[in-house]
Image (tube, rainbow, N blue to C red):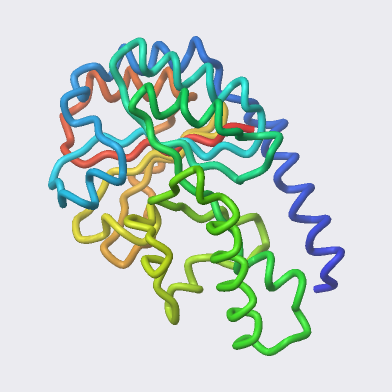
Length: 250
């Protein structure tokens, strides 16, 4: 497929999904947190789970693509209710500065890197050999971490765009820990099955994390109408001791 056409289609797919699904509303997210209060004792950030090898956890995972004001609003909401989470950021001066980072840390949340270096390298060097593309991707990954040392990124997660390259493939030959990353949200925590929810506005996918890092859908007949409904279902369902709730914020 022509590269320009592929990128255009990817953008169209993302924009269409955003229009269909909308955004997570803060009031709905508050209702979700109140509904799942029974899981608060298991709530932890990725860094501590990986470092301490915790067998049980309830993770609040945020992928932040834009809107720093919303990021801070959600962080304050969680803190006021006694929750901790990890905010994965695509670093930019418009999205994150040191003043905001300090506010996030003061609330006991964590910051992580949301990376797409292999996909970007493939876009920019698609005529090169696969080996050269991966070398460029590894350089991009190192450079973005070096350029953002002040943000103390110890965890990361990959962003895979529609029609793009799976960024996890870079780790078949490289080791993300070589840059002082202690946990990759997509590569670690794979030793046991994990109930995994991905929330995109009004859409919530109900998944099971497999030990090879892939996902499978759990009972497609179960419909979850947004984050508020997910909270209700978790409140009235059977307690599970390994849960990740991954949310996207645009």
